Structures are given as structure tokens and as C-alpha cells.
Length: 191
Image 1 (cartoon, rainbow, N blue to C red):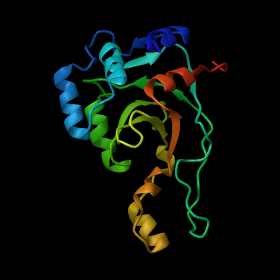
Image 2: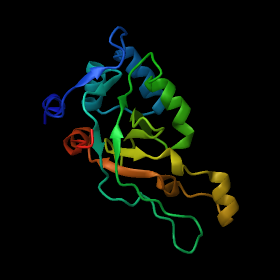
Image 3: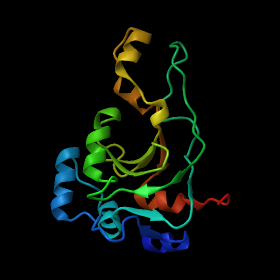
């Protein structure tokens, strides 16, 4: 699949900072991969190297495969399960700006499951993240900051340590791969 053709069909994307160099180079990618501890999928790496910090020309709608989060708490513990219907794509991250990949990864690394890389945002404090673990490598998720987990709260409410899988309570699958993520985007007709 050619992402560039899909981007064109959706109205294109433009640099957010046209006078700045925001496209990651090989040295920058080495820094990102060292920080996250995994290789970055080549399709995403090529995209970010070409486009850097960029934004769609049209308002692009993101919808999850399911409205239910990836992790659902058991009914016998009094922790709510969350739903998500849609959001918009705002900015793809790159290097050297407020939308810097390394800076964003450092800021959010302890706030999401291990081996996730923030690659974009929705303009409302939520992130589009790329999974780098071997089980779900290359899948794209929506990370909702409004229903973020807290290990101390979980322990206080349940009397148990938070299991790793519970850290998926605020993640929704939005792409089986970076290419599939692009295929599933649509122009928001409300624009």
C-alpha cells in the first residue's frame, strides 16, 4: 500500500513549521530507538522522515475498531470501563519543536504501557501511539489522557497491585499497522 496516495486522497498534509527542519534523521532515530528500547517500524520511520512535524489539510476522523477499551476491568472491582467513539488527527510528531518525538516519549513513557511510541496527537491532549512490543508490533492505538490509569489509585481501590494488562484501560486499537491506520482515516464531514 502506498501511504502517499492515501494521504493525497485525504487532502494531503503540510509542515506545521515550514521554515524549520522537523524531519528526523538517522542519528535522531537511533536516539528514539535507544529510548524506547525497540526498532521502529520502517513504514512509520519513512513517513516521519519524509513529513516531520506535519498536519492534515482536512480534518481527519479517527474511529476505533471497538468502542470498548483494550482492557475491561472485571465487574467485581469498582473501577469503571471506558468507551471511545471518535476523535480527529491534529499533528504528527517529528523533531526539534513542541511536537518532538523524544521530548514527548520522555514525558509520557511512564504514563502508558511499555514499548509504546507517541506519534501524533488529536489536539485535545490525547495521543496516537505505535506499539513496539513483539505481540502487537506496529499496531496503532488511541491513548486517552482523560481516563489515564494510576497504580496508586488502583492499589487503594482494589487492595492489589495493578496488573500490566490494566494499563490498556485507556487504549483503543485504531490501526492494525501504520498503513491500515491511514486506510481507516476519513475526512470529517463536519469541517
